[in-house]
Length: 181
Image (cartoon, rainbow, N blue to C red; front, side):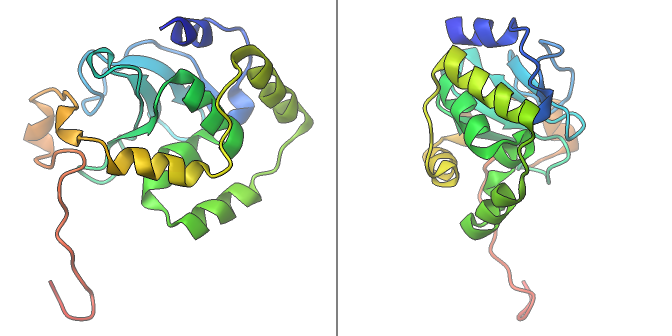
């Protein structure tokens, strides 16, 4: 939790990466119970990253705009891993939504992100301050974490299921538009 506190209380302006530390709690219904907010996206309204203390140091992306059952996903093993992914992807939205993309699309989106001089300074500062785990293939790293995670352990407010009966990570029926359901 030391890295968590250090990141949350840092005066480093991370907005060029699509992040801000902002509020430490969320009242959004799909945010897991007892979640500690790591950061908020400045690119997408209400998208945020959190840690669920009883699930260890795993960092989760919470996207209220995602389809039912896809609102919460693990993205990093811990804060240093999260910072490394942000440094590798240079976009909070790309980290949060990797589960929706193919590896080819993810890499194409990542290649399109321009790095300003300010962003380059912020990335260097993050590397110097936190010594994050650097990722040569951030997409595979996140997808492997998600494939091996038990989504039933995510504690959600029971009232969330009044609105959305689908549990995050729940099995999805395969379908085809060519042959019907």
